[in-house]
Image (cartoon, rainbow, N blue to C red):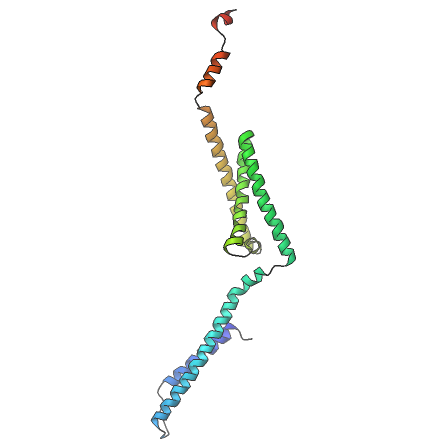
Amino acid sequence: MTTIDERLTGLEENIAEILEHIRPKEVKTEADPNQILMDEIVAISNEMDLLIDEVKSVRKDVQIAIEQPFEASEELSEADKKFNTRRNIFVIGGLAVTGALSLTFWLYFLPLFAVAIGVFFSFGMLALVLAYDEFVLPGNTIKRIAQNAIASAIFILALVVIISTGIQVGNSLISDRSQSEEYRQPTATERQAETRTEPSIGESEE
C-alpha cells in the first residue's frame, strides 16, 4: 500500500503532465488543427479524472489516519471495561465520601474541614473528566493522559493545585465562620439566660 507522500508525489507528476498538455506545442505534421485540439482536450480530461481520483484517495488516507486513534481507543477489551467500571466506582464513591466528611467536619470537627474539602475538589475534577468522556466526547481521557509522560505530569500538577486551592477555600470558610461567631451579638433569649445565671448583690455578699 502506497503512503501519503508517494500519493502526493504522484499528484505532483499528474499536475506536471497536465501543464504539458496545456502548453502550446509545435505541430510538425500537417494534421487537422481541430483534431489536434480535440485530442488535447480529451487528454486533459483524462488527466483531470486521474487527478480527481488521486485527490480522493489521498483524502481518504488522511481521514483514516485522523480517525484511527479514536476508533482504536473505543475498542476496549473486557479487562479495560472492568477496570473502567472499578475506576468510575472509586471516583464516584470518593466524591460522595469526601463530600460527607467535609460536611461532618464543618459541623463537628472544624480543623479537618480544609483538608477534606481539598480532597473533595480533586475527586470532583476526576468526576468531571469521566463525565466528559461519557456524555460529551466518548473516549478514555485518563488512559490517554497516562500514556504520555508530559500529560501525566501536568495532570498530577493540576491535582495538586486543585487540592491546595480547596484547602485555601476551606481555611477561608473556617476564618469567616470564626469571625462571625466571635462578633455575633447575643439574642434576647441568650441575654435572659445570662441574667438568670448572674448572682444578685445580696447573694454575693453572703
